[in-house]
Image (cartoon, rainbow, N blue to C red; front, side, top):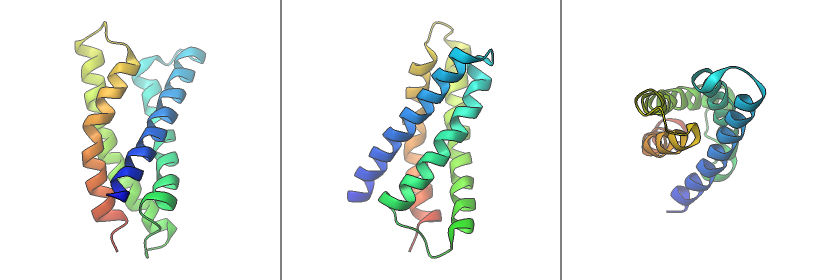
Length: 124
């Protein structure tokens, strides 16, 4: 139960990092919501790896490079789901605010990422 609670907290921080970077990129560049999200996802993935490694699951026995590669693989898979849901919402519901689409997409991908991280990255 502790891991799930910390995972949720780290996910919240990751969401804030993602949202802050997305908002910054939308305000400061002409990238648009689809391209800007690619950058914000990468930033959030880095933030959550460091926090999950040190708070939620503890470092694996694989070493930081192998663990990071696995984390990246699971993160990319869950980010693809997250990004697909986000993009589908933006494209099919043009009146939806990008941050609302981000919140919905993040919730959808959360279960997938917890299973992947707990079973494939930080398994002991």
